[in-house]
Length: 131
Image 1 (tube, helix red, strand yellow):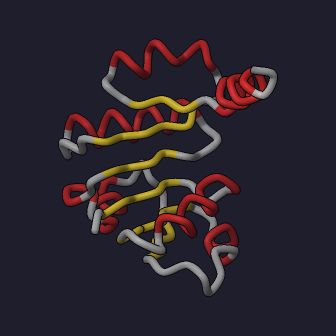
Image 2 (tube, one colour; image 1 turned 90 degrees about the vertical axis):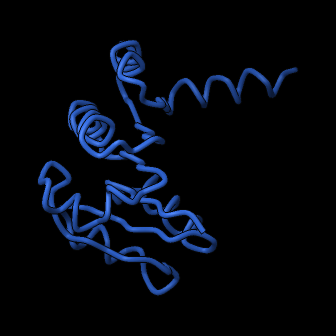
């Protein structure tokens, strides 16, 4: 069973946390208690209320033991900073970032981070719908 940390409990973070917690050890970290409360009783993981920029919060989440870190906040710069810290300070191998501004993609990839852009994915899926 893998150990996965998700920073950001919006729609995407919540959906991913609910899905992954069925088969993996999942920790969700968010600054909003209300956002984490929406996970409900179906969530089979740990919730941590705090700021992902706070190293003590990342350590409480167990970042040094994580197999993967998903950064799903709506703030590209926040995702980048936490991703860089995870890679450089904690040696986290799999760091996956949600990026809203596709222009920042190259900068993020140069850091060895995996980038996911919602608009790009939707366009690719829609394009494939017509063959």
